[in-house]
Length: 495
Image 1 (cartoon, rainbow, N blue to C red):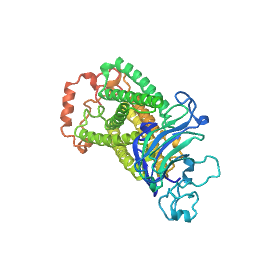
Image 2: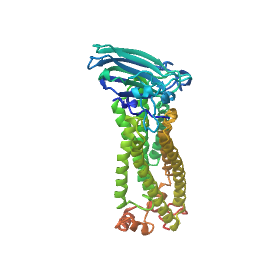
Image 3: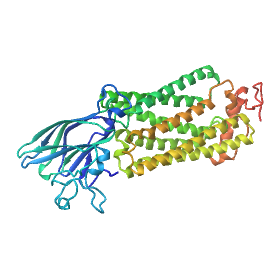
Image 4: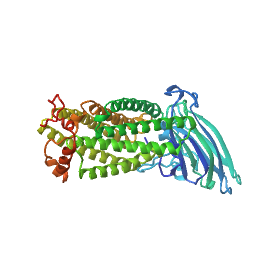
């Protein structure tokens, strides 16, 4: 499908699509040979996933603007177009060998009898034989006329992405100031079709995290004397998940009702999401490195873990901010990749380090013949292998969709791009919570002074860890050495 940017300069209006579905124009300039456009996913009544206030079954675009010219020396023309994305190929003309479309009818194109180029200084709109014509309204200016209002309604008959264009193809019109608003209403409310499914999705996810949090709190309260540091970290991630999903849910509910999004919920939601993703990855990494199980601390490796977390937080924060301020579909393909690829590379780094550390941890546990811990980590590794296979398949499909520019065709399923990662992270978190759930046998999984540190500690530059282990062994109570899986009396038996 052809993309809108072409020889006639197109400008995306100042308010981003996902920030508001009531677009306010406050004396916004429209210069000659410029087209301003917006795109929003709209449901027809019969296809709408929900019907209720404030939409009450109506799907329409309301235009209420006043166009004011800076100079009224000549007559002028502004054209307003609204159409379904299926009609995008009929708007404008792609000359043979050209990279971009021409949208305004010119003298050379008129002489070539280009379809749709019927009047010089007008938009090129080729006739379409099937249903779903391009809705078009001409706003004319007489000589010395400076202002002209436009009040119109466009009823959505077909579900899909719809475009609204303000076009100034007649140079004699001069600069025009747009003042007023356009309102996009779906049958269920103001939420764009691309975002609607996020509302029930985050509602379900918030209930999921709440249920997990309540269950986890009960277990922690019951076995609070035997809690490990790792289990405290899991508590923090669950709490972040509850804050994140609840924030997004109420943000979308408010957006659907009022037509605008508050800056506060967006900031809180983006920050909570980014922190949760970062902490979740760090949690999986430190577990894979054997923190609290085969080593009491991470030593010098902690600095590298922290550095990776900070870098990931920065790039993920940028991607999440861009995604929530301006939809990914309004960004050029190279710019999309610029935001997505660094995060994908850092994710790959996390996975490589996770599996590398997990391999060494499994080797340590095997050599020490600690069957309970070994079984635990083997189950954990199975969860991670499944997650990386699913992630690789998902990223491949997502990149293929973006590169092939089929986003308009998949407008109502783009939300799954983000939803998948939320489900995957929640699944991994639940698996970790299940494997490391608080119980009376907690201490058999805790680190104890079992053996001298292996060669992998030297590879990580953990100088002085043996001394720290000896100190911990000296100060720890006997029950902390219950690492033998065959011991039934809980005594401090060593392998």
